[in-house]
Length: 169
Image 1 (cartoon, rainbow, N blue to C red):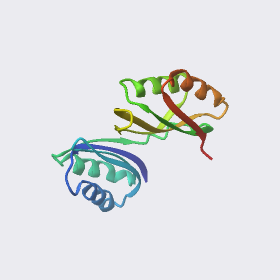
Image 2 (image 1 turned 90 degrees about the vertical axis):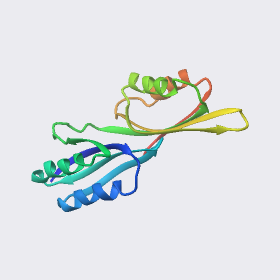
Image 3 (image 1 turned 180 degrees about the vertical axis):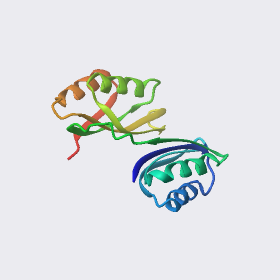
Image 4 (image 1 turned 120 degrees about the horizontal axis):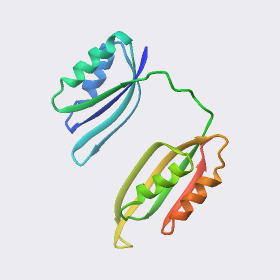
C-alpha cells in the first residue's frame, strides 16, 4: 500500500465525496484523513488515502475523467525523514484587515515553524462595526527550538490581535 494525497477543486455539487470514496474503495484503498470545504460555491478538498501501488494510476484516471473536478495526486515518495517536532495551537482574533495571514505566516517562517493546519474566517462584528478575523493554526517546530521565539514574533505583529499559543500534548 502506498500513501497518496489527492487534492480536489471544482464547482460544488452533491456526490463529489461519494464518487471519490467509491473510486478509492473499488481499488481496495483506505481513506485515512481529509479536509473538505465549500467556499464561494466551490468544493475544495485534500484527502490522504492508501492505495495498492498498481491501482494508483487507475484511481487517478477515474478522478481526472470527472469534468467538473480538477485533481492533483501526489504519491508519497518516502524520502522524508521524520525529525522530532513539537506542535502548538495558535488562536488569533482581531479586527480584519488585509495582510493578517501574510504577517502571521512570515513570523512563523522566521522562527522555522511549519504550518500543519490553518483554518480562518471573517464574520461580522456588530459591536465593532466591521469584520472580525479569526484563525486557528497548528504549527510544528523542531523540538529544540524555544517556543518563546514563536510568542515573541507573534507579539511583535499583534498590536491589534489577540494571540493565544498552547503546546499540544
